[in-house]
Image (cartoon, rainbow, N blue to C red; front, side, top):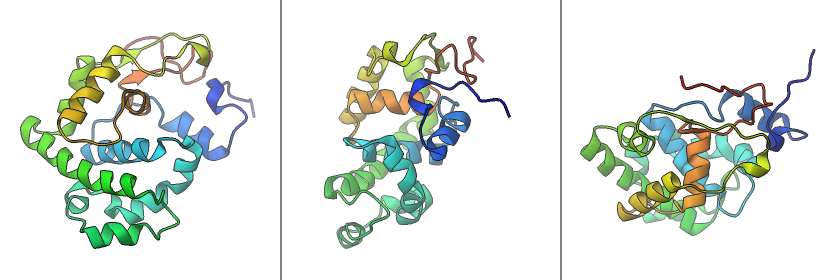
Length: 191
């Protein structure tokens, strides 16, 4: 079997990282439940590696009601405290609380815009930004779009949504396609 050329961050890494790169990273998301999942996981990643979060993804799915934001928004203080004992997730008190806070803010965004999906795609005018990076060192940590998204999310009460986290969210969910031009997942045109 021929080896696939991947983006630098997915070369010489775990099979889980490679599968994520090959099948999810940069693929446009349109489903609100998936948006809440990525918002939760990207916030959990702050200060940690994405590999750590990928290995805890199923634990997050179980701990946070399958990423059902309606249920998560109702998590009591006692339930949040109990989650701090769960080794299958990042047990940081502020990150756990932010997931509940973000679920509540997520619902308000849905009420205002009809869906979180409709809200977030506005930050890229409804189309994926396709970049043409030759190597990963060219990829920025943030952009004007991630700055605007971060500021707006914070204004709406979201937590763990700094501009770097927002750019990682944008990359993960296909708002931005940052596959390098030599990667087999690279698509040089807009879809």
